[in-house]
Structure formats: structure tokens, C-alpha cells
Length: 173
Image (cartoon, rainbow, N blue to C red; front, top):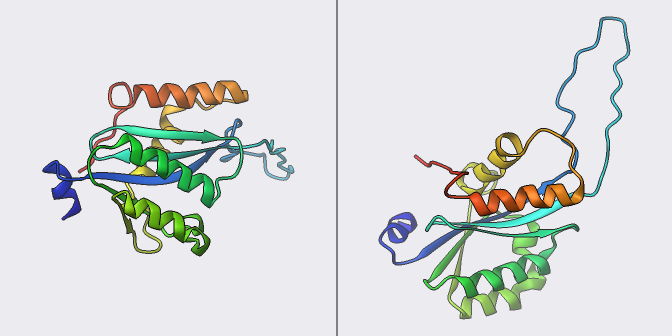
């Protein structure tokens, strides 16, 4: 029903979520000769967190933070998002605690007054949030498998954002 309304141009759907990006690629797997001890020193660094909205009109809107995303940062992103969308906006979310915190109810009420509606996905169903596919593509296909400086990582994420819809595309069935 929501997708049909978006396709008809009645509403804008926003698939919204957060993802973390580390400057170093994760240690995925390695081979060690039998009898030898395998040791890889994992490099730990501050993660860049990205809040994103994948809109049914094809736009991608993001905000980057070099800190943890909490409920207030998330609400701030939604406040900025509603100012950029001219149609009635339906935000599709998972049930993460920063999306459902009771202390944020006054902000949710304010966003609802501005015309934002919320649709919460069933628990344990990330496959229903289309932005999850975007995060996977960025991390495992579009970002080079290398170590980045903080500036390089920010620039790489910005490059993907600028090229989204032309150089970087998603196809949904």
C-alpha cells in the first residue's frame, strides 16, 4: 500500500537507518599452516557513523558523524530531512532503541505535527529496510578494500553519495 502510494506520487517513502564505517577493513579470514599459531592484530580506530535516508524518489540523503549516533542526533537528522522533502513523508525504521526511546516522544510528536509519519518494521527483519542493501553495497562492493585516513574515508563516502543514482545504483525487484 505505501509503495503504491509512493509510486503514484502521493507520498515520499524514506528508508532510514545508520551504519558505521571503519577506516580499516575488517579481518575477514586468513590461512595458517597446520601447527602454526595464527595471529592477526586487529587495528581499532574510531568509526564514522552515517545516518541515511534512501527516498522512494531515488535520492540519498546522509549525515556523517565521528561519534556515536544517539536519539538526539537521529531526531536532528529527521528534522533536517522533513525540511528537504515537499510531499507527505513516511519514514520506515527498525526498532533500534534510538528510534523508539520514550524520552524522545516530544520530538516525535513535533515531527508528526509537521506531517512525518513513522512505519516501524517487524523485529529482526532488516531485509525489509531497503537502506540495508545500500549499506552492504557501500561496505562490500563500492568502497575499496583498503585502509583509509579519516579524510579519505569521508571523501569516499561523499563520492558515493554524489554518484548515487548514476555511478552507484541499486535495483529492487
